[in-house]
Image (cartoon, rainbow, N blue to C red; front, side, top):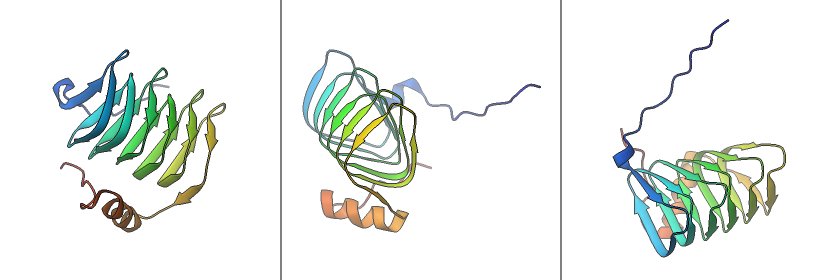
Length: 137
């Protein structure tokens, strides 16, 4: 029996990338998806999906719609929809998410709070001083 998989198509030029070997310190805000394979120290804020690769290291908070996380992080997640902690990842920090998916061998040390979209908006406004990022339509 065959399976049909529907995927959202994303233009490669609309994805911000921090490549392996790259080190960035500061704050990044993007209306598009972000992929991190290097090292990022600071706050990541995206209106879309954030993907953190296996060798990536993040120190700081990630605020976004959805996250696929394979790397290492010291900081907090604020996720409006789904956080997926993948096998082999390490997270030291708190999770504020609507949905959580944890694979076997993912490591998480911190507190987890399941939140609504309204709670997300209030949390993000308190952290950034600005309204929460709304997804592009």
